[in-house]
Image (tube, rainbow, N blue to C red; front, side, top):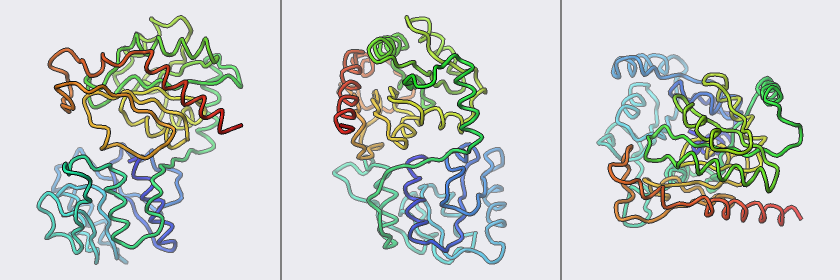
Length: 335
């Protein structure tokens, strides 16, 4: 969803007077909240039976005056069925999953080398905009927004953890909802965090998702310095956006908050193992992706069945070197 924000921005710029409705899952709504690119949101309900929810959404979307265009960023058959039942006069999406007959405009999948699976998501989205004749389709930069209340909460939460105003912050993202195969060892995150505290005075914020509290605890146990941590449920996604915006550097696994760092222009070092970097490539110049080629990769398994060599092969010294390079480049650009 974060990578799709560039598409939403482009749509608004090309259709400035349109009434734009987003149809999305409830859990991704906080990504786009407070953005100026849409007029309203219709939420999917994952707790319902799929067909029943499609029919419910179709009834909502068919209400007058109706929609002239449905743009499908997802590739599922269900989304094309919903677009057809919504009554949208024009339905634009990629010709995949046997759904072409539900679309008025089945768009060919963008070519990108021999393997069609390795097309960057941002290029996939941009190909739909290009088909529509939109201007500015090459601006792939994600963008997210916060509310004044979230910003105030963020300052209060940091102050409650003893954060000194003006001290630089390091964002550590040691989890991944995908599965344990994407996780770098907590002790290695701790080693990197201590380096940047001792060298640059950066205090680490450990961003832990649902169920990832033990990972944050293990990192803290290995650190010589004291990281900033929050209890599960204490930080909303809006708070997280505000926190990331205040950071000077991000060290992360291949996970969603990586794209928050990109959205806010942070230097980002991404530690990648079981997945292919092409799929999430964004052309962002301030990111270095560290990945070691191994015979069994990329496997896309959620849990490693062997020795997790793809992640173990990436050493803390490599991460530190990459991050220092990005910081030096940033300082040179600032003059």
